[in-house]
Image (cartoon, rainbow over all chains, first blue to last red; front, side, top):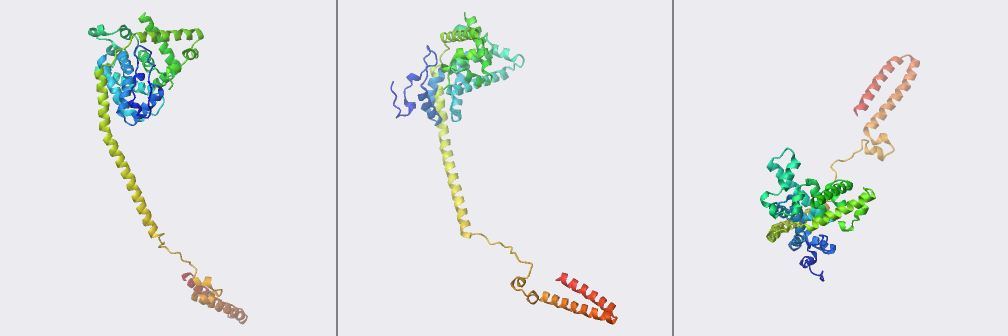
Amino acid sequence: MRTDFRHNSCNKPILDAVFIRSEKPSIMAKSDDLEQIIVGCKKGDSRCLTQIVDMYASRCYAYFYRLTGDRTVSDDLLSELFVKLTEKFSSYKGGSFEGWLFRIASNIFHDYLRGKHRRTKLLDARKTQLELEITEPRRSDTEGIDKLQVQLVRLDADTKELIMLRFYSQLSFKEIAEIRSEPIGTTLSKLHRGLKRLRELME
Amino acid sequence: MNGQNQENLKELFEQFFAPEQAASAVEDVRKAEQILRENPAPEPDELLIADIKWQIEEMLAVRKPAWTFRTVAYRVAVAAAIIVVAAISIQLLKKGPEKSKIENVSMIPRKIWETNDISTADTDLALLTAEIRQVEDEFLTLELGERRGNGERIVGELEMQFIAISSNFWEG
């Protein structure tokens, strides 16, 4: 597809930028295109922002869904993410856009966890209870849930979040370690253990 | 962009694990990622995406007048500031430097600076000079009087005169 940059980059069809689900999610917009779209977003161009939605909605939705196991909650979190993104775009100072986006996504997920925690008043055994409450699929819904989602419940929340961050954000380990404010060795070690466990569960 | 496509997993793991462990870790990561790819998460509903886009449009539509108002307000404030500064500068330039209301005056009479004959230039000094001369004369008389035997009286008078001169001098 040829691109005419004399026009606003946000008018450009984004077929080449759409995440193709059957492939590895690294096939995204070319970095030049993305930069132009980001410039448009910073200026408050709604077409550029809707392009960002088209480009990243699938990955972000999958990230939320794998963490919560609930489509309704994921719908809400995805909406919140893009609303926050629109509000905060002026504060994006460059660097990895995916890193910035998934940092916001991670914060939204943690806010959700905290809200859920307050609502359910699970003051004791907080982490374990949250895992069960949030991620365990309801019995009536299990038919529609894939095997992976069922097995993910067996992983602890932190490891699960790390795996999802790695897979859906497509960030490097260094970037993930920065987002999580922990040494890269810790991130590598946790992720390796988690993925190994997930592999064992799935086999 | 520094994504994972540019990342060399083997090298990265070898920084923290032994070579055999690193190779195994890389293999684990690749296989687990393969599992995640083979089990895709559900897609967001198209209606949800449409709703998000609508929300964004609405937010931007609400925000735009605010931006315009902010821009106008900012420009008006800058223009007003320039006008005020210019007006103050013009006022200051018209007035020129203000004269000081405090005058510096010398404690020493001007005549003293203007003539070498201090005693004729100032009346008080002329009087003082005359008195000093009188005292000199009386000293001379005293010297002569001593020889004549009435020195004590004259010394007393002289002392009185000195006191008087001294007090006159300090009173100005």
